[in-house]
Image 1: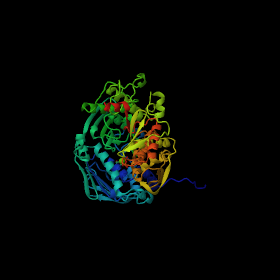
Image 2: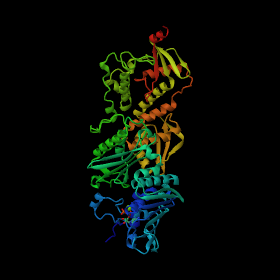
Image 3: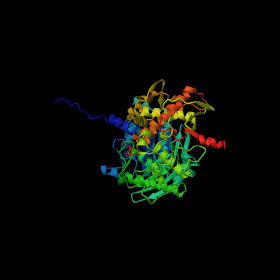
Image 4: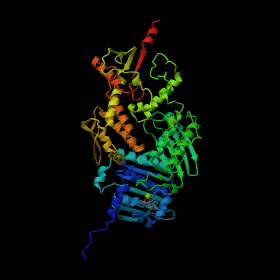
Length: 609
Ligand code: ADP
Ligand code: MG
């Protein structure tokens, strides 16, 4: 008989392949080793790192340790003391569950382990290289386990090369360390990098742990959350709105003391803050969920940072109420309505704005755009005015519709009131190199030149972006983006959309190269805009990338608009005015600032009374 072509993979090869999934970078090793230490019941865990983990990752614990047989077994694939049947997967209380971590790590690094159980006289020392045990002997060592992982990916040069700088890898390790330390405040942790003790965290309560990690000012910036139902218990801390930061800050979810990422639940938190914090600001939060493991599925992601609840909408609703409740209890929220079931569909902002009457056109005398800077508009109370503006701005900012579309279902738009016949020449002059002054019928018009140009550019750019025909310019010196594999995969997934915005990206193993950008986008803005794109892709609904187009249009418009102080020729002034008043809504900049103001001749008359 001919020998068949199918062979079983040798174990060390299978382990290397499995390692590809479990061990992506030094931080993954840190996570696996520390989770094992927690599972072993340790209450003091030391993490020792050299060179961002590229040279050494060592975890020393005082847990239950292993006897000689288990020490050896631990490195076999599918060796685990934690489950024995597939059903166990659904009842999981421990961290590890696949029995793959140690085998995978040992396949791609040099590993040394010392371990001893409480009742054993001597412990076991093991040295493993590329899945092969090269040394095993008895050793005097304290109760517990110490595992040192050296020269990660020494036998897979392609992976080794893929590692980022020690600094970047250290940041990832730090992230893992923080997540575990926050999840287990009752356990002492320390982190030592290149011989320096970076953190030494005593056993403490949750709030103290947060203070020890983020500085002792942090606890004052938080309010407690607590909400318990039969289905889930939610507790932890969330940031007082006034401390919300422009950069996504410290935002942590833990489910049964395991860190998770959840764009969906993040949205619940943010929506509870709506109206309390500025648009682009982020609150800090440290939120813990306790739930019967039968309601969750942890095993959907190989690195286990994503989980599924069997009833996500309920969690969303309870979380939102919990946070609103806390903010309200501490007198931070202007309006609270606990009785109404939190509505999943309607954004909070709309609820809040219910007094706004959307039917502007029922009052024919009311013209929100006819006021000027110097007098009250006739027949309209100031209060009502601002309500109307609020409504208008809501339309402007909260719907993705263009102003054109809005005219179909909304009453008079500003265009009705300010209309320059196309390309009509008007006398104009610059005041303080800041305003363009001109007239229209019986009005004196003062146009803010920077805002006017910004608004014109914005609408043109947005139009081009929406049509997917944004002009692109090649960079002489391509810009490299420092991204982790996760982020790269997000960009890759949405590449066509990003290309349509005028970016030319080059993906390679080591990162992403920006070779082309939308015309007029300044090089300094590239990293920032990609951070924003990634934020949207990761934490929000990727379909809402229209937001990104608006941001991109705004950034470019801000960069390219004529500035205050810039002299404009009369032709330039004319062009700007004509372009501006061709817009469906020239009155406001995309961020809602006033573009121009007017004075009626009759009000000028009054000055001469
Ligand atoms: P898993 O954690 O999924 O079981 P691992 O490969 O991470 O798989 O570990 C294999 C086994 O080795 C564990 O089930 C446990 O019995 C043992 N083990 C690993 N690390 C430790 C430790 N620090 N202390 C005690 N036992 C450990
Ligand atoms: Mg494990």
